[in-house]
Image 1 (cartoon, one colour):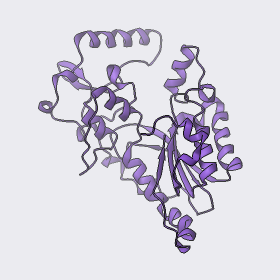
Image 2 (cartoon, helix red, strand yellow):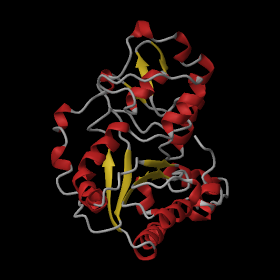
Image 3 (cartoon, helix red, strand yellow):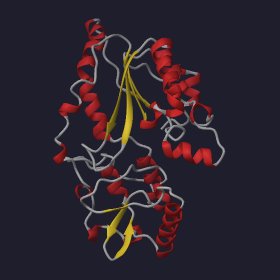
Image 4 (cartoon, rainbow, N blue to C red):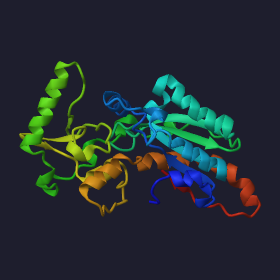
Amino acid sequence: MAGDIRPFGEDPSRIPEHDVLLAGFPCQPFSLAGVSKKNSLGRAHGFACEDQGNLFFEIARIIAHHRPAAFLLENVKNLKSHDKGRTFEIIRETLEKDLGYRIETKIISSAPFVPQKRQRIFIVGFREDAGFSWDGFDEALSPQDQWPTLGDILLSHNEVDAKYTLTPKLWEYLQAYRKKHEKAGNGFGFTTNKRTDVARTLSARYHKDGSEILIDQGAHRPRRLTPVECARLMGFEYGERHWTIPVSDTQAYRQFGNAVVVPVVEAIARHMEPALVRALAPKKAGKRSARPLEAVG
C-alpha cells in the first residue's frame, strides 16, 4: 500500500501510466449503517464527510490526468440513493460530462459466488464507445440452487480455536443489546447462522464483536468466523486458491471487511474483456504494449 490517496490526487503524475483503473472510495459515508451512525453522532456524511466522502474527487483527478481507456469503480448499493440520488448524480456528471467517459452501472450481489449477501454498485467507464453493456452478465451466473452456503466455507469444529467462541460477558451483552432495540422497534442486533445459511455483509467492524455473522454452536455460545473463513467468505481463498494471512486477527477482519469479493470482480473483468480488447486495439495496432491494471483506493 502507498498510503493516503490524497497526495496522488494532488499530483497524479506520481502514478504510472495505465490503460485500466480499478478503484474504490470509502463506503461508510454512503452506506445505510454508516449514514445512520453519523446522523446519531451529529456528523456529516456523503460528500460533506471531509475525511472519507470527498475521496471520489481524488480518483476523478487521477482519471482526468491519465485518461485510461477504461475504469471500474466500486461502492455500496446505497450510493445510488444517498441524499435522494443527488450524490450519485454528481458522480455521474463528473464522469460523463466533465471527464467525457461513457459509464454503465450495475448493483451486483456476491451470493452467486460466496455465501454472503453483499450488494455493491459497480461503475464501468470507457473513454471511447467500446460497445460495453451489462447485457448477459446475469445469464452467465450459476443457477440459484447451486449458490454456496456457509457450510461450503466453514472450518470443521476441530479446526477452530476456542478463542473465537464469544465470552459469556460479550454474549450476555449482545443479547441484552438486541432486546433493548427490539423493544424500541429497531432491527439492530446480532445474527446467528447455521451451515445452510447465507451470511449478512461482513464489515470492517467485525473485529469488535462479530455480531453481524455469528456461527451457531448448538448448546454452546456462538462464535465468530475465523480470519481463514473470512478469506473464504470474501473469495480470497476460493477453489484451489489458498490465501496466507500474515497480520493479526484484528487487522485481518478490518481488511477483509473493507475488501471487494474477488470472484465478483473476476466475473466483471471477464465480462469487460471483449470491450477492453476493442478499446485497446488502436494501441496494439500502433505497437504500443498495454500497461498493467492500476489499482487505487
